[in-house]
Structure formats: C-alpha cells, structure tokens
Length: 223
Image 1: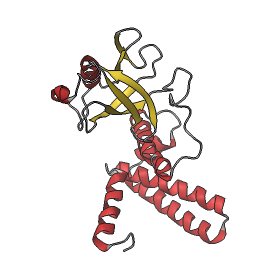
Image 2 (image 1 turned 90 degrees about the vertical axis):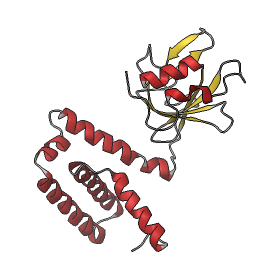
Image 3 (image 1 turned 180 degrees about the horizontal axis):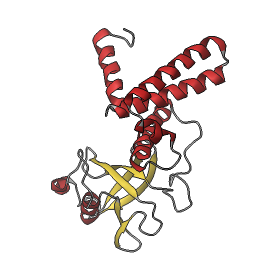
Image 4 (image 1 turned 90 degrees about the horizontal axis):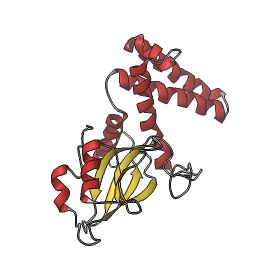
C-alpha cells in the first residue's frame, strides 16, 4: 500500500466531502503535479476516494460500469497520486498526480487534447523538477553508460570541479559565441548544478526559496 499524500485530504477527511449534492458522486479534476496542466475529469464516490488515498493511485467510480475503476488498470498508464484538495463548497476535488503514460484513451497526454507546443514560462521551468527526478533515477539505477551515474560516483569534488569548468565555458561563450552555443553551455551548467545539489542532498527549491527570501527582504531580486 502506498503512503497517502502528506498534505491535502487524508483518510480521516472523507466526511468533509459533500457526498449528498450529486447523489454520492463528486467530480474530480486531475492536474499534472509538476506541469499544472489539466489531464482529465472523472467522478469519485466515498469508496473511490478512500481507495485513491490508500493505494496512492487515482481511482474513480465508473458510471457506465457502476464499479470502482483504477486509472490504468488495463493500459498500465496509472496516475500516481501526489495530493487531493477539496474545493470551497466541499463538492469537487482537485487531484494532483503524475501520469505513467498517456492519460487519454486516444493516446494524448490529456483528455482535453495534447498539451500546446507554446507552454508558459512556469510550465517550462517546471521541467527542472522533472530533471531532478531523472538525475535521482540515474543515480539509483546506475544504468550502463550513464554519464550522470558515473560522474556522481566519482564524488562531490569531481562534480564541483566539473561545475566550475562549465561555468568557465559559459563565461567564454558569452563573450565569443553566438546565442545557440551560449544557450547550450548554460544548459550544461544548469544540469551540473542540479547534480551538485543532489550530491549534497539539497533540492533546487532550497535555492529558489533563498532567492525569494532575498527578494522579500530587500524589495527586489538583486543583492
């Protein structure tokens, strides 16, 4: 059994939901936990919500089959639960989840169509959180030929040295290269920064929070 989410609704909160308004059903909007995009709409009964919290995977009530239905039970494209929130009227749920594959039966990432190519700045930045997860997975699995796993295994001193080299390459590209090479060097720098933070067991959010605190204290993003 998976651990229920640390925030939002817990098993003891089932009676907070207004189950009577729609005859025992409540709509459940599923949102990508990292990108913020809307993935699908389903319906839950009290039993479906309980099963969702207990399993750590999103479970709906199928109105056509009149039974509980775990998303992905036939396709394998599960929705890994991150959080469940109740709206202000207590009659709708916002479910944050991480999809294991295509969400829609058509093969699309969302039941509302594929995500637009022009993503917002916030959605693009959210990829850094995904990259952190990829780095964690490479380190844990240590697949053959993985640069990430190999560099991490050499220790923090080597990772720090590599980050310094990448910083120098960014500086040189800034004064002597076109935009495309500079962007490539900056991408390398960000990747190695994430790896260094991982080597120190620190998340990128710690750096973001430090910047936000400075902004609040000093009235601006600069020093």
